[in-house]
Image 1 (cartoon, rainbow, N blue to C red):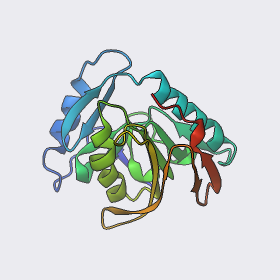
Image 2 (image 1 turned 60 degrees about the vertical axis):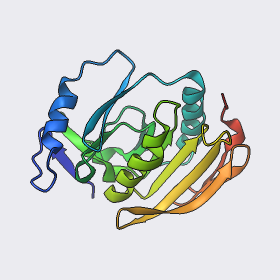
Image 3 (image 1 turned 180 degrees about the horizontal axis):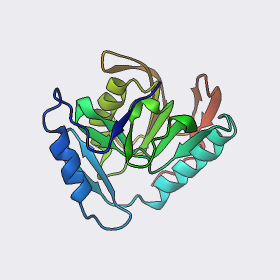
Image 4 (image 1 turned 180 degrees about the vertical axis):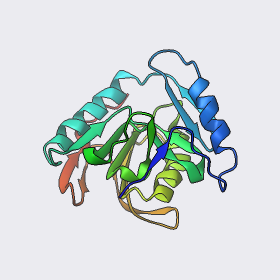
Length: 197
């Protein structure tokens, strides 16, 4: 079962985590910006563009057809990864509702059954590298990276089977092809539905 951590956790084996979280709490970013902690550094990304939001919408519509009623798909759920000194806000997180935190608590990433990140020009490497390792370290079963900015060739990569802080690549396809999400989703994603800027 996923853990929920207190608002101001102290992790003796994660130096700098408390300070990063405290800075994050005080950050006053423009409305719509995404404020995250990545490797102990508070980052601010501009609001996503229309193509990014359309991609999230298409995938969310598909996922709602296959997830149980007592699971939710969240676009603004902060997920902590204390060992990586991270607090990520994924583009989509599929989480059983019974695992959501109570007021005053923060959710650890291991509650998510699936995380989806859609790269933007400004933050692609965070999604490809730091968050990839953070989600694997947290034990998130499936991580779907939608990367319309990948070397001019948009790709979708599904990672799974986390072990030792690393994922195994389960499938990579170029936009236009289909990708299969395994159980508990068991659904085919048509990446041709995702816009490319």
